[in-house]
Length: 94
Image (tube, rainbow, N blue to C red; front, side):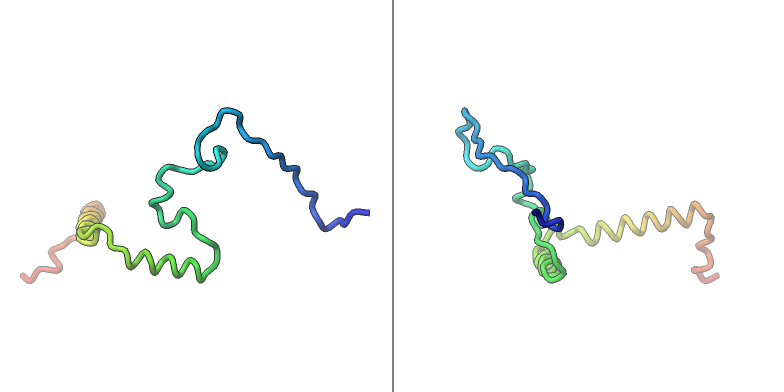
């Protein structure tokens, strides 16, 4: 009698392609840029996520990213204030 709580295992076949001469598994689907991504092969768990986030903080990216981000946010805020017809003259002394 089978155990009702255990699932049936799938059949596995040892098929290898006849004309494949490459290295590695030909059936593995992987993006060609996955080896450069830090989040492509991450392990699960809070500790692993925290350690990968700390490693990402240590790696330096574009130096002007923060300045570019602040300029874009400033332009968007001014555009929003212009759209809602906000009067900027309250910040200026008469």
